[in-house]
Image (cartoon, rainbow, N blue to C red; front, top):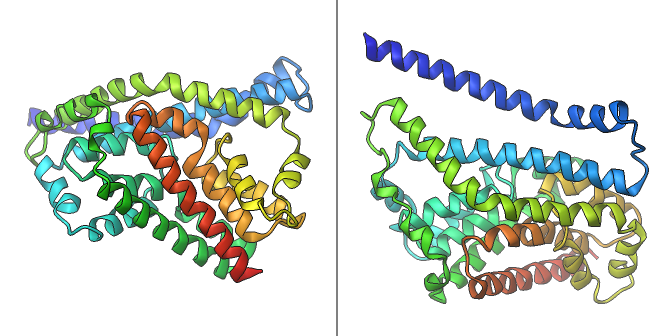
Length: 343
C-alpha cells in the first residue's frame, strides 16, 4: 500500500511539475513584454531594447525547453536499456538505420539545441555515429509544425518538397558521415556517461527514474548552458542590427550566388523551422526564389552558429567542421535543385 501511495504522490508531483513548466512557457513572452514595455517603459522600436527583449525571451524559452526536454527524454530513456536502444537503431543495416533515425527526428519536436541531449543518449548507448547524426539533422530541420505552416503559406507541393529534401539530406549526410569513421572526434565524456547504470527494467521504482532524469538535467544543462547563452546573445545582436534589406541584397532573385548567400545568412541566426517561417514568407513576397528560401530556412535550423556553439560541447572541432561541410553542401544542392524545378 505504501508503494502505491508513494507512486501516486510521485505521479502527482510529475503532473504538477509538467503543469508548472507549461505555465512558465505560456507566460514567458507576456512576462517579458510586461516587464520591459510596461513596467520599465522601454521603447520596443529601439534596436537595443528589441535586441534585449529577444535575448531575454529566447534565453528563458530555450532554457525552459532544454530542461523540460532533457527531463522527458531521460525519463523515457529510463524504461529502455542500452540493449533495447541498440536493437532499435544500432542493429539495423547501414542506410536503414539512417532512414529510421531521420524519420524519428521528424516526429520529435526538438529544436537544434534540445536535440543534443538525445544525441548524447544515442551515442552513449552505442548507436552508430552516422545514424545519430541523421537524427540530429532531421530533428530540428523537419517537424510537423513547420510542415503545416509551409502547407498553409505555400501549398502542399512546397511542404512535400521540403519534407522529402529534409529527410533525404538527413539520411545521406548521416550515412556519409558514418562511413568516414569519425567516432574519435566525439568528445570523450559522451562515451563515459554511465548509461548502463540507469534504470532500464519495468520494475524500477518511479522515484529512481525521476532521480535519474533530474541528474541528467543537471549534468547536460550544466555543460551546455554557457554555449546556449552565448549563441542567443549573438542572435540577438543580429536580430537587432541587421537591416532586412541586407538579406535581399545578398540573396536576391538576380544573384546567381543567392543560394550560397542565403546559407551564409542563415548560419548566424537562431530559430526553429516554425519561427523562421514569417521571415521566409516576407522574403518570398519580395521576390526571393523558393529554392533560395528553403536553403535559408534549412541553414537557420540545421547549421545556425548558436547550434554549432552548442554542438561543440559534444563534437570536437574536426568533426564539427566535417559535419558543417557535408550538411552545407547538401543544403546548397537542395536550393539550386528547387530553383531549377520550381523556376
